[in-house]
Length: 465
Image 1 (cartoon, rainbow, N blue to C red):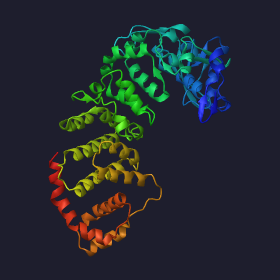
Image 2: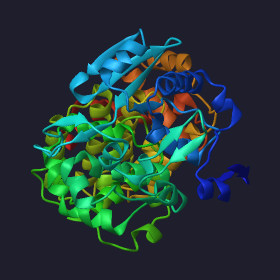
Image 3: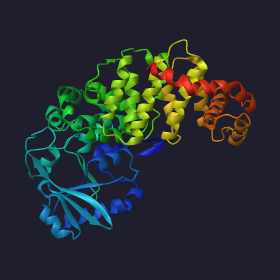
Image 4: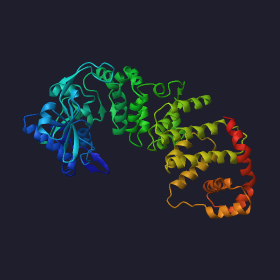
């Protein structure tokens, strides 16, 4: 595989003879050399031993990238492993899983195993030591069912995973219905792999996922969120689409809310900001999900509070929860304000919410603002958002002289609680008009406005929700 015009192009020989050698920087890495050393010790003592799973898949796609970790598998029993390696810890002796420490690095080493029937669509009733084929037949997808011998530089491919990687297809090992019934989490993993790797789910696996999708409801919220976290930045829309092709996603996320999917096929073409911009994401997985969800589903106004209540039930970190709630509040406020509300008042209140989001996300508001602009129909407010987006994308954006504002507030005998608000509004004007007005004229003109806004107007408007 070599680099051509910024993209990795696969060598035909790689998929023809099933021989493979990662690039030299990978082969010389401490991770690779340590894992190879474990395989060498096991093979010298008469046992089969291979790298297995995702690391092999990723090295085939990008052989120049050092894997984050390497999992190993062997024909050796846990007792054999314990005798051969001094620093060994059994983390699942009943499952044949050992942690082997070598060169200050730790590896998960699993004995070939055979699994019995699955009792709760997540875990097998029984596990026993098995053969190489037994181990291969229990795995989830063909692209993950690859075994690499680092001593002989050869790949073992019992289920034609090399061909599926070449054709960018996700296919279940063996019978797709059986694999997805055994472990419902595999449906989420399949959608995540499809998004992260730009792979297509095979028709057989897609139909099986639809048939077995009821098993998703048996998964814990924590386990679902963990899959959200593993979706790469910029790929969440595609993860959502892959999952939404399998099941009614609102039934597993917002179980008590009735919603209609947005079936407007021309929506992307009507608003060029939609599909292209909704991919810009933050590190908060549920917020990334929420943006795509609101983009894909039509929601009745009286359901906004219900969504907020549902979000409270998810085990989210505080930052993720706050940004979701503020995002919904912003949309709700914009939607519920009466049409005859003064546009200056409306924009200012909206800007206050955006400022809070900006603080919470530690200046990651660029993606937030672009995604929020999808839901804003008012042209003046869109202009404000675009100015803010443009400002956030520049390193040397103009800043308001805070000390001068404080000086004029003192001179005009204004209550000090208005200082921060006036500064924010000055920034708002700067962003909206693209110019910096004279501080004195702005304060004089907006003096009465701020007093009315903070004393009565804000509370009255928010009551309309």
